Amino acid sequence: MNQPERLRASDVAYSSIRQGLAAGRWAPGSHLRESELAAELGISRTPVREALRRLASEQLVAFEPHLGVRVPGWSHRDIEEIFALRVELESYAAGQAARHASPAQVAELRELARQIEQAAFGGAEPDYVRITELNNRFHSLIVASAANQRLVSLLVTLVEIPLVVRTFTRFDRQELARSVSHHYDLVEAIDGRNADWAVAVMRAHIHAGRQVMLRASTGGAANEGTRGATSETAAG
Image (cartoon, rainbow, N blue to C red; front, side, top):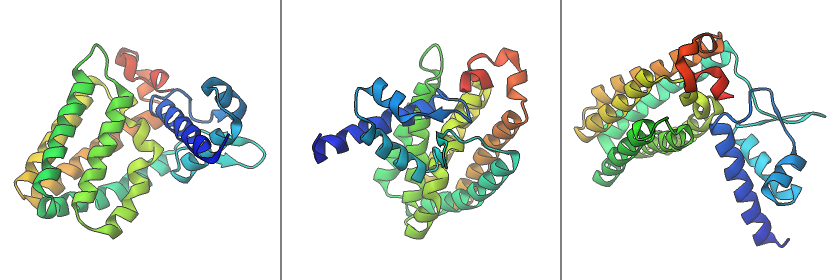
């Protein structure tokens, strides 16, 4: 396999594994074996290894000495620390976006909010992989719209952290509806150049996600059998 082919194969492996992580295919603590992934994807182990290294650099998987690659789990303290940072940094980003976002960026945010709603409620069941992809694009665009490169550097890992990737599999329909509503409110606040409103909505939005994850980390979601596809079982 020449260099361009290997790079393309690595991109395919990266995309496939990342989508599996987003969908909760592997439970926290599961080990990802290069040989099994390579056989499944029909490629050699080298591009799979490269894809796993890329995912590890984004903290989506973790390398463990003598054990290989593991899907990380998150403690109560991890969740508290990550969301505490997100609340402060992303709410600031939302306020700055209200001051600096271009009309084109506002239009793209509005379209992403519409697509998130469609992915959440347009079918018989929410499309969690699609919601996660669109949500990450939405939040990343708000950060980019803040026009602060240092802020982008600080937030890029937090926005892509596996905690964020797996959050939506814990949401029930009411919580999804609230998240969708927050997205639309953020668009309106940014479009209206109302920084205070944007900050307030983003803080509420992230605190709501934090509450869902804390409930899941203490086993609350697993004990609510009526939640169906949003339970811990469905998540992993």
